[in-house]
Length: 589
Image (cartoon, rainbow, N blue to C red; front, side, top):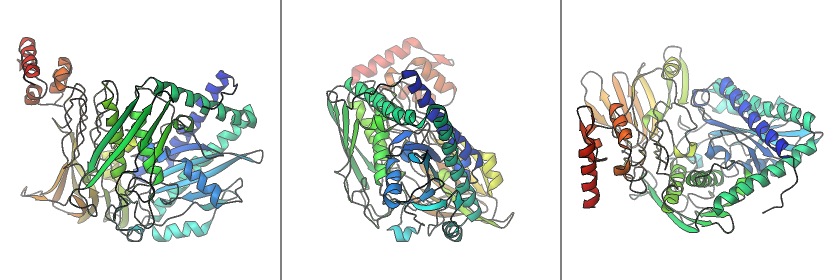
């Protein structure tokens, strides 16, 4: 461990909260000024501040898969440009360098104080369209980056002296299907990064640039000590996590088996996670990048251990992530596509890591959370006959079940493991106003959360109709064969499903697991997301919690008896019969 520097602890707390507040102001600015719904409603973006040597300093409520691997973004800026100066801004979305996937447009602004580069502001925002050959930013079946078709910018300068470089802007406007919407989101991202620039200048005027630099070292050292102390309380353990992604175009009939070896070394105050023994790059868009593989592993570890640690480079000094070139969950080789590199396999890595920690004992780890890009979370596209305008956007009107933890039930609006429940549900009213769709139904699904001492989050059922001749949905259902698993005796979550119905006749028609579907007038699509896994023995669940779940329709009376051993009589719990039933079940095991 590095030697702790003398730094006023009060000032340390003040500056740590000041940088956190700066990132939160960036976040609010981008949320309120962006144009596309995937950003200003679903909040699929993150903001962060890096140090000049490209270490993550502050991320506030940044999405883990966006910010935990953000350091390489700054590394690319410094490597590729030897003339960085104040007033510059850079556009970066290259998955073969430091970015996540091509749909995440990053704006990096180097922040200079007294002529010295001291910090870098980063905004990363998922785009409604990034120039893909199909109208979706998750082209999971693309066989390579050329079939994917996205415009890729390897950290190119997009502003000089605070002024747009029109060549870059014109390229985006000419290839992106919704150019005005993209440009509005671009301006919002630049504006958010400039907020950080202004606020850090104000901090430097108040405290001095030397104090800010000394603070960074002290804050990282403090965070590292916290992480080392937390790990030192764990037993020495070698954990093995495994899972499998469902079969998918380009994966073969058995899907994608995934595994990790996690070594907990309390004497050294460190944890390592080895992802190298996994399949090679796949001929589809599921491949992870260096950033997303690292971010997913870190997210799983921070979810798996009980302590709440700062999300910064100081904490990460104590966690080693081992990756392999050419691996599907490692460092991708060009031209393998990473179009869905922030979702499918990344979600599986988070799950297998956080679930593996439950092997240590009760109170550690979590169950697996649900994932997948169900039609209720699809990219919709087409032409709005009300105004003649083309539209492309991802809608997030249906959540998935979150994992049960040792302390709380799973969250029903979890969205997906890599996001850590930080993405929002879309507003039904806003989506119906902006796009030619009707959301006829959005409801939680009874009995869909995995039973356990703590119950998994419920699945969501959503029904969507078009208000025009056709709306194209691009989606990818995942988890039908390998649904989210429970841990420590908890049961798995319910599987996802989706189908199309004729509105007049009610005739039901199955749709492919992954692909595009043109939803026609007179049809409706029914989308059911997966439920989350449960934690612990269901027979140990508090009887009052079971009764509350029953009254709130989270579970059925049959599940109360079958899964939890709770006997319901006259609207309440028959305590004597419940004790007897549970005792008999335990004895019979």
